Image (tube, rainbow, N blue to C red):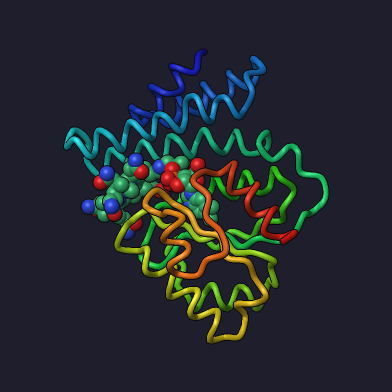
Length: 210
Ligand code: B12
């Protein structure tokens, strides 16, 4: 067992091995955050690099994503361990047209770890579905994720739909995902942006006390 074998298992899309190696690392008391940040996330980064270089294709990205998810399922209880009492409720979802959910799932886990109650709406969440969920769950914040430049405008549409429904003032809106920047967040009127899952939890807490 080593962080390298976890990295390789994800890179090679071997979900069984990824899960077994993550379990062995946890058993050996390797901190869950190290497994995540030193093996799982870098492996997905490499998958992205190979895809960009034309050396990997969509089906291979998908099997690597499944292997990453298999490892993350085991890490989740450890990352969420700090969960004591609810610091507030946050809805998370990947926006309309976008199926990338690994980053969003990680953000959900880190928020849980920071003590938030998290309602996960899944991926391809339409503006209307966000609005309905805000009405039903009454969260203090929502976290929208987008990984495609073509789905970034759905974040703006969701903010507009919240305004139209008279709900915008009731929730803080956090956005994130690889193509998202602070400038884009400012441009569409989001309350916050964070580049990764740990800072997402910190930023959400800051927004809630603001
Ligand atoms: C895995 C993957 C897939 C998998 C997704 C599986 C899944 N269940 O998620 C599959 C194979 C399905 C896929 C499909 C496609 N993909 Co893809 N995919 C990737 C890949 C390799 C990794 C993404 C990932 O999981 N990263 C790891 C996570 C941990 O990082 P993250 O998502 O960025 O999240 C972190 C932060 O951004 C932040 N964050 C994320 N969300 C949020 C939310 C909030 C509120 C906050 C505060 C923070 C935050 O915190 C996270 C953790 O630190 C990227 C390449 C890359 N390097 O990003 C391409 C990539 C995103 N895909 C791309 C493309 C083009 C596609 C397809 C269109 C390919 C095709 N031709 O069909 C389809 C689109 C499908 C769709 N409609 O969504 C492009 C996008 C290009 C662009 N500029 O738009 C990329 C960048 C690859 C590339 N270099 O070309 N993909």
